Length: 421
Image (cartoon, rainbow, N blue to C red; front, side, top):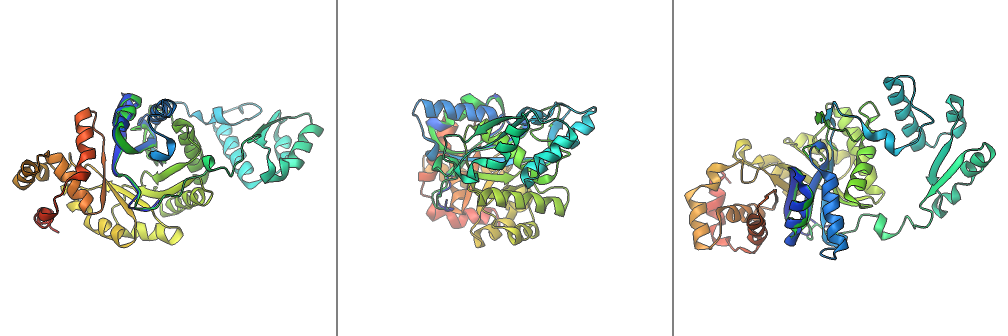
């Protein structure tokens, strides 16, 4: 997907809570075609974003190919750790071990063993294996050795990908030029239980980009420091970083009811450079495997970090606060423009009240029969920025989408002066 193909505005789903589904539906129906979320229950209801999109697909209101979905891995600090960690539900152990610590250690080891292709004999030496669930398909030569081992040792062998061709387009991220990304994206943070309804609303309004996260605390991979410890964490925080990222990614695919993602972001750099490099390398692997089209990072305000990531693998997306409080993030925004990186903004309106209420903005809005918000959005888009909007108001959703059609070219010079450009 080229930068110009990302929606020009994205609907954000953070903090929407139980309204998430209704608001996503509303946003899509209004015309949003980009949605942002996160696998972080502390602030996001990524599952309700998935419910909203599934309902819209079923009703033929929108197709998967027409919606830009963006979610995130949240490092452990961003999760609520007082809630049960749901990772045991997705994988098989013979039984839990004698202590939670040993169980967590065994689980991390099993993930490593699966990823590293180590033998079943090793697992049998720890305790009887009752069930193996593997891909059984032509791509792994029908898993002959493992299947035979199971037959020889009385182990139940369960298969998946039994019918499905894993190379089918439905299982790989679509190729979309940068120029086709939505110009605005609907964000789902803090929508809570409204998430499903709001995502449906946003898509029906016309949004074709959605941002979310596997982070129940606010909605996005988020480092563990960003998670609310009273909410479920979508991975084992004691596991290796690559395992955390992949577990969060799989949870996001499940929540969003899809087999691939348009965009997958680190919610923030991790606590150390080494861990950040590990996490970023895993995102690069997911992109190389065709499971995600674009990868990026959020909450990153120094170009040195971007240079570090770029040395490992291309950064496709940066999602940052773009507001008066950080002097409009000039250096990172400039870096993104120079390196073909999509720059997405949040706090675009709420973080800059003096810009929003400036007489110049109001005068332009009046002359264009538009709102102040529309002028700010269009100004951001004119600078190559893709704003996230998380409105719960149907009219505001429409306004955000329609901002792309405004012509403010004769005022760009004056507007740049307001932010010191």
